[in-house]
Length: 226
Ligand SMILES: N[C@@H](CCC(=O)N[C@@H](CS)C(=O)NCC(=O)O)C(=O)O
Image (cartoon, rainbow, N blue to C red; front, side, top):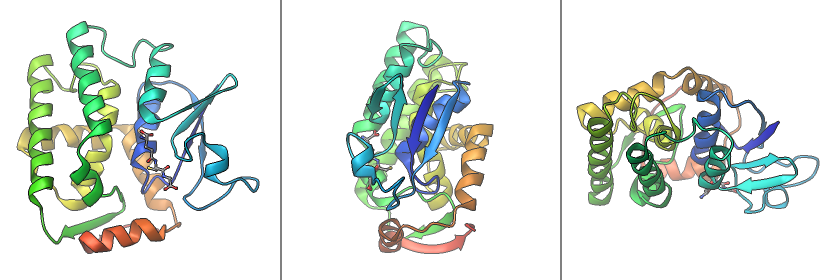
């Protein structure tokens, strides 16, 4: 059985990616949620995870860390992780890698915080450029592979990599192009995304660092959390 370590569902965008991929693709796993700043049997995240970060996966005595490495490990065992056709698979891997290494303005300014709604103080040129690139990237995938998912008819790992952007659109009201918004709404409507969202709303932990980052970039207009 796979065991996936994650952090708070309200905040942890990197945890969401492999969690959603496994849930939406029916890959069974046991979830271990270690809230930011907490310990398990006296051990901190730094003592449990090779990278001192989540997500990490445990399987057959191995530890696999970093969302992209987890996805590739699972892809060796589950053919549904990436699209089957080579052109769609090439696009999917490129787009997931671009998300993994890029979009710094989006990730830094709009931290994932599923349960609140925020009015940003400003949309900087860098944030605007990231959103424009995402619009082009998604439009390219949807039109080339026919939708409704980025690499075609089947949901795959590439869609999981953009799932946190769907929560960010919802939290910050990000003005993506209409086709992008429709795609992100499809992600939000996935039963697995709704399960993550409900669990995130029910969490009562508040992480000071994440809350301070949020207050620096905008004003909270609604707080839907428990
Ligand atoms: N590149 C890593 C990034 C992982 C990451 O930054 N995780 C954050 C949580 S979303 C973390 O564990 N932070 C540790 C901490 O803040 O103590 C991945 O793709 O998994």
